[in-house]
Length: 599
Image (cartoon, rainbow, N blue to C red; front, side, top):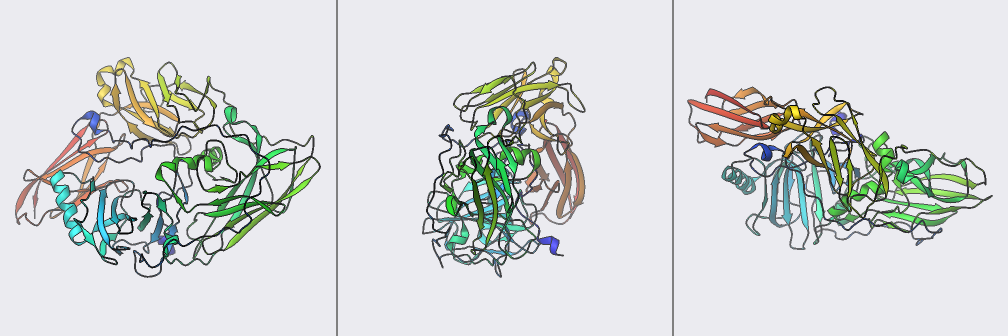
């Protein structure tokens, strides 16, 4: 029974090389529009080359502290004790978690309350991301966000249904006129659910400040029980003045042992840490907000994660040892300020000078919100002639040196990859290789080296349409292949001249496939309540429409279960009716299901 609590928002520690987590907020009518739309790139400053690691620097010696920004203004969005399955700032794939994941006991339908009075400012309904989400604007300038909802309540639900029928689509993103839907503190505004990218029933809850930045709800008086201290699991030592990033994609590094001495050549080093926090039990592995590094009792670096802008999310890939995560699925947080990292979470630079014939003590301390602590201590000795740290990375120089401050174009016989200016955090060697087609591919398999180098902006991938398929180009789709899971993910199918073109923020292996078979529709229940299973073997479901007696009827789409479902409006009288369901996939193929139904 306790396993029902193990739910969170996309918390997999496995590396996901797919870029298919997208939203589609417009009705699609043709092949090109049928491709699921990808989110716009966030406009950011260009990455810069930071200074070389500095000498040992001592930071403010005060213990990491947390200041409650407001207390009593907000009430808990759920009744009863608040138990968490996800914490603010937790490390996720390509982003920091923007709020709290609050457990609902493994069930849906719990009453969700407005944390403070105000008005509904935005309603977004999507089959991905936050699923059914609600945004409430408050008089103090903040906004609270409620995600993965099952349904809205009262006048809000009525407004949502009216909007969906007016637009004739399930998914929409509506910035509600100020004051149109007013709410009071503690009023039920929705029921908890499992919609969108949720891995199980829970409520995703955020507080955003006046600038739209997300802040830790625990700093605003939300009471959460925390009984268990964090745990520092392991640490690595990184050689910062011997950077193999260009050729290997990572600093030279090696493990250290608790209370043991690691002998290394003299030089400049940094520490990476793997850790975990818990609150009331060990069912969920949670994130660390507060941490510090001490060298011989002097604090040289602190991490404090209490707020951030959404445009900073991709910098998580400089916050962690991205190579180790992408190749092995384990996150090590860099407790030193790396080049290209513009996060504001840190004090000090974390660089550690190791001198010849001297031994230093290093303490890694992690703190939780309730001031529980965990410390990992180890020693480092400098010795001329000691074996250097060399672990990590792949020595695949590729064909050219790519720079952060320019647009870089990689080419092969059948493909082109354009990496825009401002995408790379550091200079690195990259190239394209091709291998023969295999399985369902009708093009060569195109691989980007180094695929484990993180991108801040989307790269454009272009694969040439084979001459034999030029007459069928509108039925071609691009897929990415994940070697670890041995599975393919749909990327899109936009035709541009003699190429299929798509964008991705995670580089890997790509190929083209022919998609000429429409989705399979299996009716599960067809009466007053409609339910269908819809599956497409090659691409995603991009568009669907249901009609009863020629009139559009609202159905909800749940990709996790491959289901379309919904109730017929009460306006339909008992008797015989005609039903038609049309479902289109990413390859532009449409399947039509027709049936006479009785209600």
